Length: 301
Length: 322
Image 1 (cartoon, rainbow over the protein chains, first blue to last red):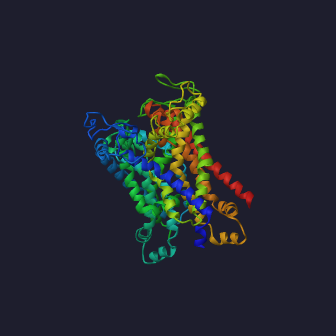
Image 2: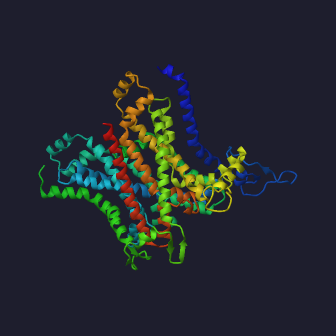
């Protein structure tokens, strides 16, 4: 069966098409990496310069022309574009801010989602189905709805330019998906366990903390990854609610950096690479779980 | 379990964190947006708020948007333009992006060699921040960027430029190579990175759906002598209809809400204005909070309306089949 497959000409065609798609997918990233290690003279053609930007002369005192090299590997690997991007852009700070904001939002989302899911699926009361439907409205509400009112509230409470200004809205907008995913996972926990724990003398809180939460670890990963990617790349709230460098998250910080290097492609490329590489490493390690997070959200919706 | 007072109290406490977040950040702001959209005010505190009825909506949909300094945007209905642009993006997404995603998903899910590797690579762009993708594509579309260099290297730059110049009506200037600088090219230029980034997302969802099709169903069809195309058309695609519905809803509402890419890709978003970029400019650059809220309300209504319409469309078809 396998051998037959290998020799099918149609299968070779399929692989050829898929490989073309792979190249299309990877080329922009390859290109980003290469121009992050070049200077403009090499990218657009010009004269050879040293790392300080001074023109290098040959033994006859003539400038050395550099041919345009837009997509090839760098002829001189200019690693100092990276410290330039890091120092001017304060990338480390933005990175830390993104981490603080995302992690806090995830924790709040998880706590709120697990508790609400427990109340709506394991406890018996009138209106729990309706409450669930109500929370699911959040899947369709665009974040623009919150933009002006939340901006005004934050400004009145003097909370603009703080971590809280992003953490609470991010948690709120991840909540509906968090509940949706949690319902799926909590439904898989057998109800017998609740009853056994009840007979052992556990109350609703005991069942929640001793039975449900420990068994919800897979859900923690899925909800956490989903919420993390939502928060990590968010731009609209981050642009409007935070304007001080101290609290800027990575997307806004990177955006700021472009203002300083409008035409210098090397440091821009370096900044882009610095912002991209960590995500790619995490993806390489957790690709299956990350994909599962996205699938869980959509398939159960 | 007994339904005592403490039981009821527990239920309430379990719901409390989610309710506070949900009511405070999602539901109350919708109500507030509706109220703000009926008022005119320029102070962030809302101190100078005065009720103007539907005036903001009328201003939004009339061919002029005026700020306090006089005519900022003249003779063009920017909101109308922005809505049309976002619907064009949605149309492209549904009729170009989703079919590509579906055909890749159908091929990959048939157990092709290297299926996991292909899947992971195609999905990867979804995880990259749109800010980065926008800036990367800016370097592609610039006058001396990658696209024009490639056209130059192929020796067809002048032909392409004059072909586009002949089709540009928004300005008398000939096409100079700035792909995001012309109304006729900017929106399409923005669609390409969106396609690049999200095709893998839809593909992953569809792939997961196809993997859920029961094996015995597929085997039975093969025993009956169905070709691959027939199996796809009559078994796989009807089976994954719920996922296709989700993909269409995401593609359309995503286009309505789209902000990040246009905002990063273009110095002047007016060439491909979207409701969000217009809202951002009016609200936070011109302090027209009431007008901005009107855009938010229009977006909320449209998102819900499209989600319902698409669900309805998918349900009707399903009933006809059965």
